[in-house]
Image: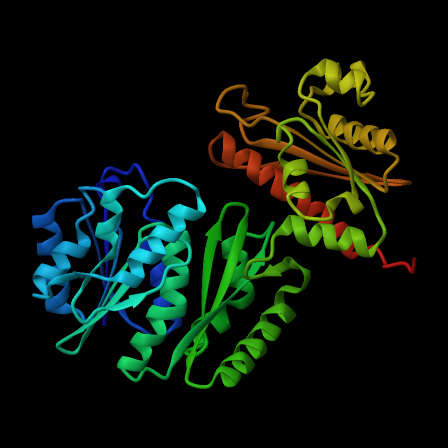
Length: 417
């Protein structure tokens, strides 16, 4: 069993969110390494020593991050060396690596960086191409100890490429755990459970978990085994069964993003898009243009926040705003049609709503959002009642708009160019 020890006063004060611990935990699970404890401790020698001794008393594997820097409050290396009774010795190869990094940047190396080249006796140095401090791997009375930098970009490759393989070899771990995530949008957690609950309750390997995220419901499939090919077959089989039940409600898998998949559908159909946003304030346009190559299908985005902008730019009739209000199905439709006409695009997509926390009324509460999609000869509108703070309402509204477009595009045949 393993324990993660994250070192840094900034973590205890909440100045930095400890993303390292959750990321390491996921990688350990995938590698079939059980994790029993996570401990966070500040930059204090006595408390680091106490936490490290406790970890050694109850874990076969201790992975520590942080406290390997050049400053006075970087204490991990020295404390661990003292606890294990391993004297620190200057490693010429590590020192040369540090000196090369400073020479490359054309700045003199501060003398205190020499401490990063101090290595506990019998420790294995794990080269760190992304920073000055190397990782360190030690074996002590049947236990494995890894000391890693706290900077995520330095820690992650060291853990996956060098530490985990050594731990698996040391303990003869053959099995691994592989997860796959199916993503849905616009359906509640309870409806997902209704659709696949029998699989959820019956499966033992793979197992199924349903997780709520902002604007999405994720279905996590997790399989444990020794044979990677058999794991893949089991996950493929279960994914196929779930997709049979949910169909197009599943928009993507693992790291796939809704905005990227919408872009792919637009490109396949040689379609173009213009967006008119009020309550989402440009968020849809921002997400779409985060995707490389989005200029193939995204023509323009208009943030028409005021009444005047809706009237002047998008030609929403003043009478419609007066009669129905700026937050209404009618205004959303005129916005979508107006931006499509302006851009000369296949589709126009529009949002208008009340993001909060003020501005709501009993008839039109905070979180009320209208979304419209317009094309040549047709349009569709949707009303949503979204929950959460202002930023969350904006994000969920953008999500629902992209999902409305995705579902419509799935009904549009792909035409030959």
